[in-house]
Length: 331
Image 1 (cartoon, rainbow, N blue to C red):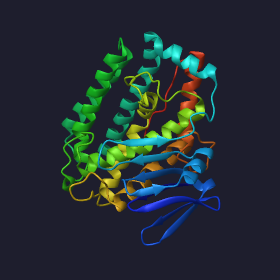
Image 2 (cartoon, rainbow, N blue to C red):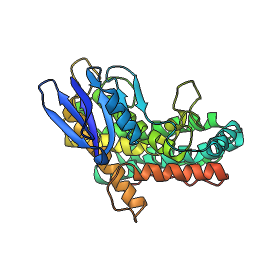
Image 3 (spheres, helix red, strand yellow):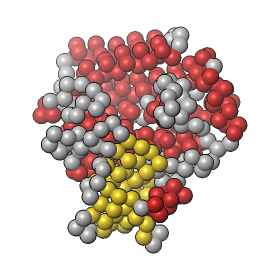
Image 4 (tube, helix red, strand yellow):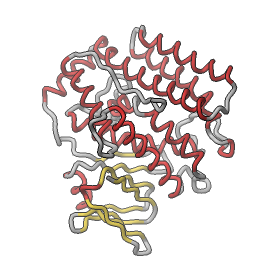
């Protein structure tokens, strides 16, 4: 299975049932549709034909478009691929009720913070680049926040706890990134290479999660944690929370194994950086799918998100308790 990344001056088109890309020098790459997991177009110089877009939509392959220079990104998918009125009606009724909304928001926030805690443990165990006192302060801080999550009274309080718990993590995670990058902390759209890498992997992750939501029959625009706004994929952002520690960890590890760079005076990552980041994300998502669902042996970025989102849908529609996936590289 493959993720197709298109960057720079290029044309994406359909050719004999395959998706083909040709650059300005005439170099061509073709990927058979059955092998294609995801297409990501980066920048403003690539062209994609309508036949290629329709083929991707009909085959359930999401197309993610990332500006690379601004906050703009988009996800193209088939919104009527699957689903029933009953599934979405259950979703709307639940998330319109403050108690029901909190019931499913709480485990998602807990999942993210537990995942960050596990990344912290893993990195400290194998890369002791922080003082033990600082490590223990962050570890116990996150554990305390997790206890408070259990008793949060509303979604607003959950948001504050998530931000506080993430801050404990990033205060230490700065030390896990090589000093040459000058990374000072997580600041979305800041423009430095590490934050640009995080922004890029988030966009890829949103494409993956959105497809899982659509497959399940849920509405990606109607969530339980992120504020509802016109055109905002609130549920995509909500369900991405449990997978974000994987993206965090992919960036940390990629920053050690390669020289991640952006173009001068730009947030746009260079091709080599994109390649390394996507490989790390693909590896982590595939490995986690095999770890959690041991009966599934085929490497795929889809299996874990699709199964977890399906489990979430089952819980919401039947009003069951939801026990979310938690990233754990130490397992």
